[in-house]
Image (tube, rainbow, N blue to C red):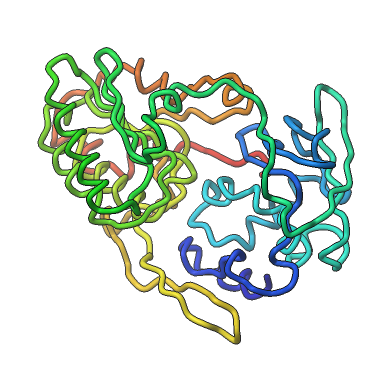
Length: 363
């Protein structure tokens, strides 16, 4: 964890030690809960065994330490481009090896129970959780109403298109899928965009954390040449998971189209380093970035792509099956003038929305 903290200095999101690759005693241990981040807190979304009383609760303390303090310490060692990236991975802060190794909470012994306190139904529940090799297996998820995008997905396909009245949703969740599968999906998107009734395209990149940069280029170029490349014709959904090759796609669409961005800030920076290569350092497997990707202008120092329409993801909306960002993308009215010489287009990285403040709940 000390080496990981030093590698985090690069802040490129790729140069790091991934804890799941470390084959040392203790790194295989997990708690019998899953913690998921939302704009209003870190919530327990799946449990088993002694973790059951915590289900649906907002975590307030770990081993007596306020969760905000724990996550500030975690963000300092996590190799994200920005706070949105650390926010997306915040649930990993409760992995015993991370807690103990980074001295975020509790004693040094990895096998020692971790006490988690959470607000559940207006009461504080306190449970001692035992780290175990199978801690993260066969958990029972919180019962909730599915999001529309979950009901639209045909089977287990990672990428799909869905027409909803006059809006076409293109859910691009994985750039690392097999080439033939992605080409089939992109051709489906091309065909759907030719439907006369479609007036707006919503490209959903919220679950895409990267892969092959080239796999998004066909769709990006088609969108650029399409009738949807106009004010009000193209919306892109982003989140803290939108990273690496998905950030490249985001940056190129921002540069080349009239798209408006909706949701939460991306987990990557428009100009960043990537193509991480594995290496062994004193027995530890690590990754280091090898290539610069400057998909925005060279003076662009932004740490993320900030949505033009900021819609934070809150736990209550998620549990109720309400996708507020998708709703905003469907309903938004774009009154911009189609003027390629406007300052907003030529200096797109400096437009007012990019100065919007966003902070995770622990700051």
